[in-house]
Structure formats: C-alpha cells, structure tokens
Image (cartoon, rainbow, N blue to C red; front, top):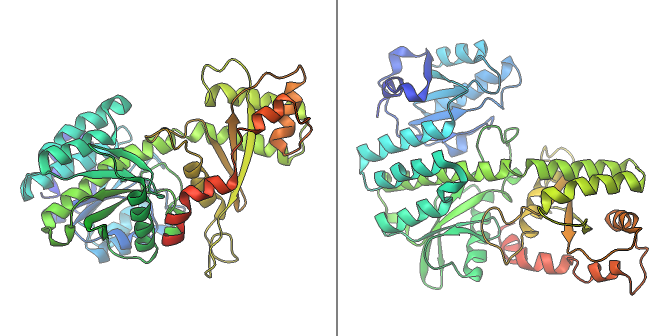
Length: 441
C-alpha cells in the first residue's frame, strides 16, 4: 500500500504535517515504539507509530528521526495523547530528512492503525492471513470479552494450519489453541528465546526440540503509555511474551513472515492492555512498601492492607495473612542491572520476574496473577502475596502487620502458624523457572 492511502481513510484520524511529496512511498509493515533507538527492530518500509514517550526535549528529535530515515522507514505517525500538539522540533527534523510525518488524533488507538495497515498489506501480498486479521479486529474492538489471544491462535490453525502458543518469558503457556504445549518444551523454548534476544539475533528464532521444529517470534511490550522507552534489551527480556509456532520459518517467503509479524503486533496490544491492568495492584504494593520503609505504625500499615485485600481478593470476607517476597536480579557480566554506570534499573526487571514466578501454576491465562501486588524500590522488587485466611484472634490486625514486616511473634500452635504452613518458599518458586533462566541468561 502507499502512504497516501492512510489519508484517504477518515477513521484513522491522521493529519499530514510534512512530506506531501513523499506520499507514494510503499508501506510494507507497521511498528509501534517509544524507544529512543529502535533501529534493531526496523527492516525498512515500516510505518512507525510512536507515543512520544522518548521525547524529553528539543534535542531528542534529530537523532530519533535520523535513525528512522537511515533505516528506510516509510513514514512516522506521532500520537497527540502524550504531549498534545506535535513538537515543532520533530516536524523540522522530519522535513530535513524528508520523512513523512503524520499526527494521530488522541481519540484514535494505535491498534486501529496497526490493524488497518496489516490488513491492507496482507491483502496486497498474499491474502492468506487477511481473514485472520479481519476477524481479529472484532476481538480488539470488543475488549476482554472478545476471547483474548486464543481467538487469533485458533484462526492461525484453521486458516493457515499453524499450531501456535503464546508463552511467558519462562515458558508458561498464556494462550493456545488445541493441545497444550508440554511444560518441559515450553521451558526449553523460553530459554532458547531468551538467549537469542540477549545475543541480538534477528527474529524469528529457529528451535528444535525432540525432532520438532519451532519458530519463535517476540511479542514486545512497545505499546504507548506503558512507560519510558527501553534502551537496553535486558529491561524487557523478563517481561515480553513470545509466539511459538510449530513450523520451520526459515523457508517461508517474506510475505508469510511479515504476516506472522503482524499477528504478534496484534497480540502485543492485548499484552499491553493486560500489563496496564496491573497498575492498581502495583500502586497498592508501593504504598505499603513506602509505609514500612518509613517506619509507620503497625496500625497504619494494617489499615492499608485492609484496603488492598478487596482489590486483590474480591468477595473475601476477612483480611488474609500476607507474605512478603523480595527478589533481586543480578547478572555476572559487566553492566548488569543495578551495577555502576549500567543505565539499567534492576528494580523493574526484578518486578517483572516476581510477577512471573508468583503466578499460580494451576491457573492459566494472562490474568492468573491478579492476586499479586508487586512494587520495586532501588534494585529490588517486593511482592505482597495473600495467604489463605485463618481464624484470627481480636489482635489479628497487629499479627498481620508483623508478618508483613517479617517479624514472627506467633506461637507454634497459633492461627498465624497455620497460615505459614501454606506460605511460599523461595526454592520452590525458583525451581519452576531456573531451567529457562539459566539457559537464556
């Protein structure tokens, strides 16, 4: 498709700010990013969508646009939701580099533009996935009730005869159509995926397990509004999903590879929505953590925990016991998270790890961590995990606070001990993720 076709569709809400003599450029794909340097993910011919989270001053526009122009992208579409009007310095930089620039009205979701471009490009190239993308549009517009990633995976199987699964960074199955992927295979694929991402290999990544070939496609957290731009792959390596396809993509034509990349972009929209849903739980954990660090009275901490309980455990009649789980991620190599001068914050990485390993393995799906509240401070992450409630004496509030703060004041036969019997243990948690993390990191 040509760039000018974007202006012919009123539903996209695009306004051309510069580059009207370049509108005959071909668009071969779409990529959403708020990275300062997205060059590693660009192949040329993309329409780049950005929420401008990378823009912190006038000096930021020139290097960003220079990178896009050097990669041969078709054009840039900047959202107005973050900063309002598109900065003049960005308009000028695009004019200097002859890069077409569009403004995206704040009422238009990037998912709408992504879906439109993928459908148009798919139809012009081959058409074998056009039905998948078109039907997935109904999923994106209907929200969670649309069925989640399982819908598009089912269409991949029925339309293209491709069996695929969405996996977490440690190999936990998030979505799939048909038979589930065996847990050992998922863990091994996750380890291979982590290793490929860390070494900068170009996706998709080929893997073979037990004589079966798989192709691994990253599902990156590049949605606008999800936070500051990531400058180092280690910042997101423990939070991004992957799409594992039971097929060898090494002999696929370019059109088929582009179509699968479009599917990962559509699933990424759902992944970003799920991540945003954790905001309230993270804020609750952060408030409790700040109270503990400030030495607040136990009664005040207990009151905050009572506020958190209905959010994490809807319908619960009484306040539960709470367990505090602390995690830190260290890499041996120079420049690991938290090391001097690395520029990689260890806290968010540890937060992503805790949110992953604390998921109940008996519960599948992206929302299985709804009862977990994780915050980070410095290079560590701290999780509030509710334990099954037991009958407490009148002074139960204080006992809960002591448990949350790490102080044991209960007797061997007390209700508190009954709750501790169901507590989480670090060795058990780490055992579930040790194999993929050791292989990939």
